[in-house]
Image (cartoon, rainbow, N blue to C red; front, top):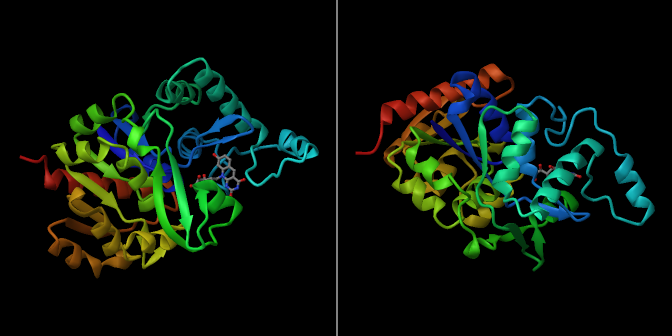
Length: 314
Ligand code: FO1
């Protein structure tokens, strides 16, 4: 069984590759929920939904979030009442949020609802939210504002300079059911090429998860989300400096520190291999730009090969 620490789009692409290489039912993704927000009274879980829509083939192909063939009738009508459309919910997407919110109001934990949504979309791999408790990624800007991640990323377009990133509510959060067990029992733990700060750290910051990854005998192999000093997508280049990390394949490996046993960088970052290896982390370079499923599958194979070479901790 393979555990994957996963954010949104980059993780979805990686998971598409991994499930082409190993049986999907042997894959469990532990997914970030720090992006989640309440919108019009509905609980929206962008990373869980991006992965679900991507892997079931219904994601909006350009946006890579939300639904393909989407309409915005409800969103448009909501503007009639003066609601600012800064975070738009499409009509098809609304059904997911309505179902999830109804089930949460009935007392179902997010992990149970995530299973229902995954089954409804025919997913064969398992998605686990990092926690069933309410946590929220907050961005403190250098001009002193304290923004929800989505306010920072979507409403402010990621423009403000960031002073600090924190997972609000983490102190009261517990890993969702089966998260710790999955990490301890995994044959390998893979860290998807997601945003290290607002996707991966926000999983590890749930008390008990970082510890479980560290205690697990499974080799931990990550994929650099930075290629040639650049992000593939998103705003990691603006957040890594806020946590004192260099915006490079080597810098992200250093940021993850002793958590990693292996690190896969893009062939454009071949020069980082020796630096990373010098820190005791096994490092290989390959094509990590997952333009299509075959590249993603090859990348997954490289990760599994490296994990097998490292082997379980004694
Ligand atoms: N991103 C935007 O830039 N604008 C939006 O209006 C927007 C709405 C939205 C609704 C549901 C959802 O699951 C995702 C949505 N996103 C939107 C993307 C979202 O910010 C990202 O998926 C992640 O949170 C960051 O990776």
